[in-house]
Length: 287
Image (cartoon, rainbow, N blue to C red; front, side, top):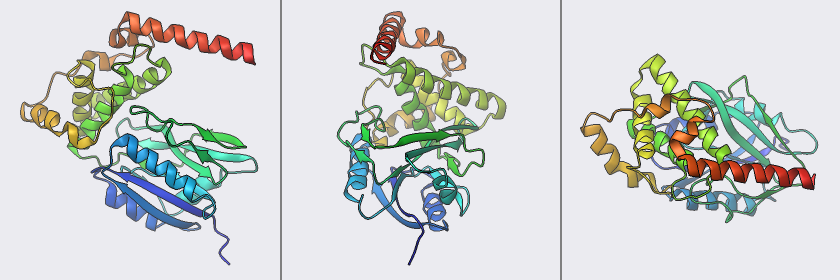
């Protein structure tokens, strides 16, 4: 009888250059009983809702569930088993950092869930599609994976790199939202700043394309609050690429919390800061 953990890995694909390498890395895994399923070319919010619905429907058949995006891959045949080793009694979610090719750093995250998790798959929104309500009785364990078992954006196409910048920048600006989440905004701004610094160091073309995408969002050329299908942004990329690019917005070079004022505007930043402070006060009162 096979005693290896039975894991359902689901990959969301919308044209990523690493897709075949992602699939091959899953096929190479040892020490796990793995099934790999795919969701292809669905709008981002719909794709994530389908993903988490699939997890719910298979809780009796599998011991663990993992989302591995098409621009991600396991770095070696023991990678998934290594991350699963972080589970212990009472742990239902493990989040491991991934090594990111856009920032040349370890960033969050690759998540594995136990079958005790229940996903409220309709509770995510159109921008932060991975943020949804998940019920589980145990603990969530996050760790920095120094072994870099999971790789992210290790061979992006030019358009894919451009979309990295667009998506991250939209999560910074949060257009159409009167009271932005400063935590989310700051976190994504840090990632874009790391991308900028890595571009200064390497001068790699794919990083420049990412900064072009972020620039279009920061300057309001792309201002939709919804992350649609990536194909909806192809015309914007083609126009920028055919013109030889755009001057990179200097706000991408800035770091520090106050740099968000120059991106969000004083009134939206203040509203976000007040909301965040209010939440902290309520938490202390409840605690």
